[in-house]
Length: 579
Ligand SMILES: [Zn+2]
Image (cartoon, rainbow, N blue to C red):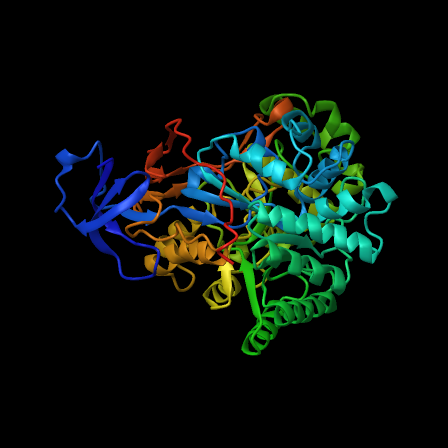
């Protein structure tokens, strides 16, 4: 046998009770699950002593944006640092294929605007060795990685490909254009794409202010593309709904009605993002009820939720609301310690605070931050993600009686390289009660972490670690989840949604994608900024302690948090037979 994981506490992903077991691995697959201590370790090439540790399936992250990064990077941090062994990309209608020669810049501007991935890094990093989606899949498949990837067909790229030359990618499509998009979609899914994705929220715009192509598509277009997806062999539509951020509550209601109709008419599953926004703080409940009603009628709607507040990480080295003011730019290039000296100088402070945000994109961010100070917290040590509202920056502003910007500025100077964590959603009640209720709902699954995206703004790709650390082990302000439930939500549930029948559970015949976890020692690190994207562009990364081993296809990829250099991960292609 290739590997024996000995005497671990097996949580197998099905939700059934934790039990001690020996897991035998051979040929990249789980060969056997045996009574603990019953297998002779002398027979195994590699033995991992898992006594006192959890043994789980590798985690499946259904919502990432590694579409560009995957073409130049074989490690795929931060997901790979948190036990993720399978990631789905191509979410939210954005991606890099198909693309016509000359159309690359538009797709980059879209990814930069919608997902905050630096355009220069994408332009430098991507080699564009493809035009069609099947060619893109071949390019992905040619490069081994630390984790497995699956790709969805993005509506944005499909629409830009067909309508792009007309100069208006968001006008209504003609019947012949819809036919062309359908043909491309079917071809992409037949070649192995695992779903079709589309964006409906008008707030998602490229750096040129253009909404994601397809945002305003009418029902006939989406219906045609869902049917094309089904003809190619997948049955799943992934959507970011209009109204998600609280900007248009009737829009969100209308969306669920549209999903209901699409699902009832075609039999497809519609997975849409669901969160508690800071404006209509109960809208999520109403949406869940609409979803339940639709599902009772036979529709298949699922809500994709996060397991924590969705937050902007504001710091002097990443995103902040002062970053493009003229006086700040004078010192922006200095190392942080020197910069802080200048920033603490009263004259400099006064000048920066008297100036305004310059760029339109940052104005949006500024607005969100200023509206969310009541749910903004200092993050300068161990993460809790469920702080008491009495510790918020909003409360600090009330107590000090000073202007909001001044308090934000002074607090950032005080914490130096620490962060202010701005919760944009899921924390309107001052705790994670709403998130808990969303996660416990049987019609939802977890996965809204955006790994690979918003690289200097947020860093939520470590959500599997948070699930175990906070929801299973540490939570004190409400109920916890059992480890069996939590692991099922990180493994079998997303694997089932995407039809990955070869993984997500530890049992003989499935892939040997596994984690060995010391739950007692599990701890997320502080996020950190590293300038390691192409062109030296910065991104936020975050590590964790407590992952004793991560195994992909029977090879150890991470040992005690260290990359072993093994690259057994490939591209998952949906087989046309597994509709
Ligand atoms: Zn996304």
